[in-house]
Image 1 (cartoon, rainbow, N blue to C red):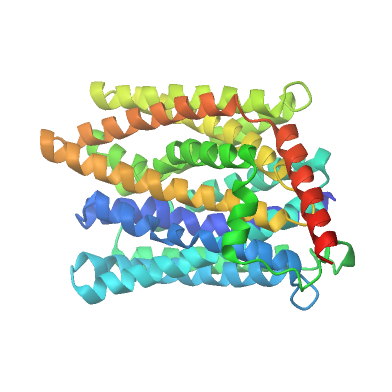
Image 2 (image 1 turned 180 degrees about the vertical axis):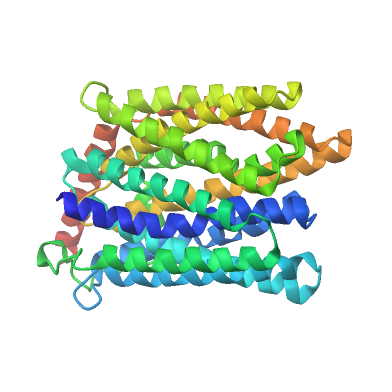
Amino acid sequence: MFLKRVQLGLLHVAVAMTLVPINSTLNRVMIKELSISAALVALLASLPYLFSPIQIAIGSFADRHPLFGLRRTPYILMGILLCVAGVIVSPAAAFAVAEGSLGGWLFGIIAFGIWGLGYNLAAVSYLSLATEISGEGDRGKTISVMFFMMILSIIATAITLSRLLDPYSPEAMEQAFRWVGLAALFLGGLGLLFLEQKDPVYALPASERMEFREMIKKVTENSQAKLFFVYLVILLAALLGQDILLEPFAGEAFNMPVQSTTRITSIWGGTFLLALVIAGIVENRLAKKTVAIIGGVTAVMGFSLITLSGISLILPVFFTGVVFLGIGSGLSTVSNLSLMLDMTTPGSVGLFIGAWGMANAFSRLIGSVLGGVVRDVMTQLTQNPVSGYVLVFAVEAGFLLVSLYLLGRIDVKVFLTRARQKGLLERAAMANDG
């Protein structure tokens, strides 16, 4: 089982490696070096997440229709290929967007869209596979291994990018992104080798077709599922929405160069790893919800310190905030992903994982666009770009507080009970129709 966890981790690594250059290095270059509006950059970077509803469709379709006897592998492979293509062409797309022409924007939309489509295809598929391969009691360990490997890869990717971009030039960035894409493709291929077995136990009748509205209805009929969806959107809008702003903020507030701001991701990743170790130590001592609450509170402290650093312009306060944010994000991410895998039912794993994946994508869209707009409006009002970032980080701390309230109302056992009751009613109705 350990080998399978490592292979699942390699799939997570492959997709995450392509995200790092796009969501950290490239957005900083577009905002600071290319002087593109933060709101427009946020909109462009979040555009891929508009594809997120396909996660529900792909997950539900794969539950019922294996391809070549495999229900997850073909979609994972297709997704990784698209992610790699997207990251390789994204620098050229960014320079085209900076020219301001219609053709440049179309190129940018296509490039980011390719990556986004690949992300959605791969994510729902490998998380569904992780749910099926891991038993309920092992899902926490599977998530920890996957994220430990992912964060290590993020740190390595960030360090590699930092060195490849010293000194920075457009040509150096294009070459660096190309190497990252090829490395991701190689690791993703290793992860897929003999990972998924052809197992008829998981197969469902191909005749069980559902329209998209029926898929949505199946999720929304469960009140706990609806609450969990809203909770994930608010929580992740805060935790993930800062991705495109943290490095530009460091550049504006503390005049840090590209090479230095890229290392912020390494610091965040190191503290995230520390959080994984902490989560492993307390795994059998504290409930998942308790760990999620601790993570949320710690992340609130991180955002508060980062906000304070923007007001005081004290660099050590900023880095302390990044450390708290990394630890809080790590604890919150691992515990909530484990909860997410628990919030599924046999026969509908892909459907529910797709719904939670859509919540993840919507949160990135909401967090990134809202953050970019608030930053730009506040900057125009005050003529001080740092004040815009400060307000965004304060709003994200508020989002986390709201999510902590919602978390207290979520109960996995109630979700499963209602899902089973619904399944029994559906089977009874089908029997009567027959």
